[in-house]
Image 1 (cartoon, rainbow, N blue to C red):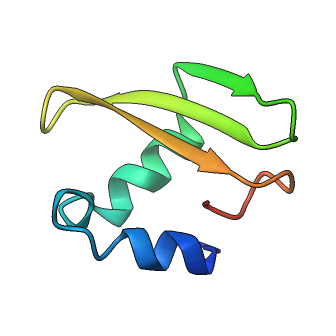
Image 2 (cartoon, rainbow, N blue to C red; image 1 turned 60 degrees about the horizontal axis):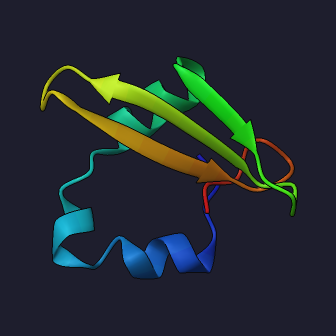
Length: 67
């Protein structure tokens, strides 16, 4: 999984540190909603059954790099 420096920085924040990489991959591969922002970034949402919450993942324009 390709990530940005910003992602690596925010992953250190306590509430974000709990987000598992497998959840991020799940959202990328199984989105329930997809929105393309005006700057080309792609927002994807999916419900994570393990925690019964939705997770939003933002990808760069290439559709692969997690922002």
